[in-house]
Image (cartoon, one colour):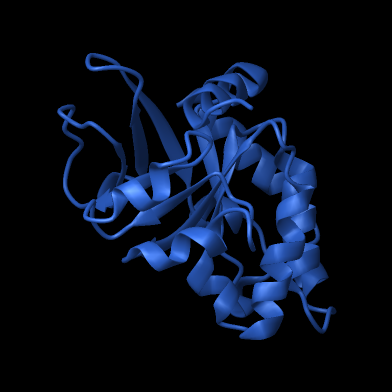
Length: 200
């Protein structure tokens, strides 16, 4: 089985992109075509993933957004994840604190490849299996002296060490990209926004 860094690098080669897309469904922002569903998070996630899988190297699932709908949101998250091409990476954004969430984030529930953490105190609980990893949330500008993955919240950037000297940078396409349009053309506008981000 490929370790996390191997999967990340393969996903970047496959799509030729250093971008992950944030999936943070929010009822008040959902495009018009999604508002007709009683449980809109699953069809929204599916439509987004179907339109963008060749334009990103992975997806970041915002747990708080899904849990805003309670059990229905958790079920939508669980059912949305399998739509992602397994060659791409999936990150579950908590951010989590404590070792007890590792099981739910990985095999026993959401089957994600990585998580975000509040700090690195329990990093070992999430990285003991090389197929999984974690990104510790930091504010401020990126610094290169890191021995683990970091999500630089202020600049919407994930960094991951390849070795002691090299770091891979992955940019986060956030809500501005996800909700580029609220109309029937939301998939087309989302694709346009991702392509524009790639050209920057």
